Amino acid sequence: MFRRYQVSEGIVIRRRSLPSGDVVATILSQGGKWRGVARKGTIPGGNLGRLSLFHDVTVQSYRRHEQDLAVLTQVQLNGALPNLSRPEIYPLANLLAELADALTVDVHLGERIYQYLASGLRGLNRSSDPERVAIVFCWRLLQVAGFAPRVRRCLHCGAGPPLPHFDIVGGGLSCDACRAGLPIPAETGDDLRILLSEPVRIGLDRPLSERAIHLNLLRRYCGYHVAELRSLPASALAPGGARAADV
Amino acid sequence: MKYPSALVNLIRELGRLPGIGPKSAQRLAFHLFNQPQEEVLRLARSIEEAVSGLSRCLNCFNVMSSDQGVCSVCDDTGRDRKTLCVIEQPADLLAIERSGEYRGLYHVLHGSLSPMNGVGPDQLTIESLLERLSGIGEVILATSTTVEGEATAMYLGKLLAERGVSASRIAYGLPVGGDLEYADEVTLGRAISHRRPL
Ligand SMILES: [Zn+2]
Ligand SMILES: [Zn+2]
Image 1: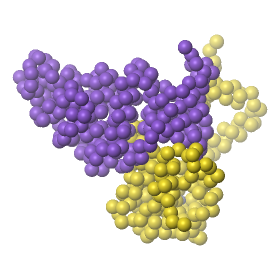
Image 2: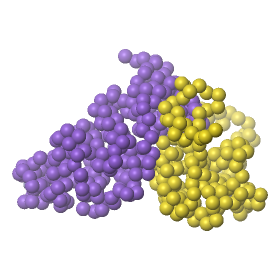
Image 3: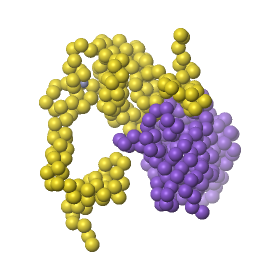
Image 4: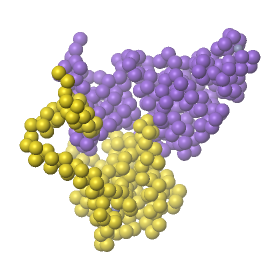
């Protein structure tokens, strides 16, 4: 049912200031993605100024007609994540938000994407190894959106591990006999299997030691199956981060 | 009925302006059409003059008239040339000038870091900032207090530290005349961590 006033919780995944002083925010909620405008949202100190990028907010919004852009009238910030601005974390927060945005183009996947993005951003805020958090949550986001690569058996012949090749186009691992795709270290194949089948905390305990390979696989996989992610080269160049070397 | 192509073009160009949707663009186009021709042509001329007559200061990237060598701030010999204040937009320069608290020079970044929008260090004037550092005693990072502005300041802070240049971040405070209980937790948290002795 259409309601003129609505209160909802969500994460600000994009935020754009207009010359008028208004702010247009894209918010990912449990029910899906939507956009709203905060009139004069750029004024510091006002409650609309709390519409911080990557933050979980509760907003009251108003629409006169169902197809109108929602006008945000009240914003409450649900916990600050101050570390997301740090140079080694900011590009990774961009990456998770951009991926979540790309995965919700015209579908209402809602709840699970929202929850993984929220956990991922909170994880980035407190982790001593934000790059690992980003890799784990990128694959999880892809998975809940139905884009997970097949990693348990060879994509082409069904053989079990070892599966030392990653077939980007086919969307999964392949065995040594089929040899489809990029060769990857055995450890990276194990990482992917665990990241995509075990609970998140087990993935987060893996060292994911081949970072450049992980980031490069993510970049190529997303580029082919979802969208070119503009934050991905940047995240691979974050100070202290591994470069996305070619596998 | 189809609109004449001149009108369609006008609506399309107006619609490219930030914050102007298709409906507003159409309203503006009809508004312009209904104005006395002389007034509309004056607007068109001032747009043309601004485009050809304005450029960026080669020193600080502030806006200036194209016939100047450097902007009026850089040209002012009475200013403190050992202090640089880094800001996102020329409009921020005007705001700081109005405060009357600053007498140094500026550096306009023309944006803030935003990897998901393709804005990295190379899209801002960071390289030129690093080339301006000789003889500079302090760089004040006055990018906005949004997550994006904060990330840009922290990134620059790291680059400046690597070069041994002293950098400071504008203080976060509570708005004058506000009640603590209405302050958001980010502002309040920063105000507490950056408190100063009385
Ligand atoms: Zn096979
Ligand atoms: Zn100048």
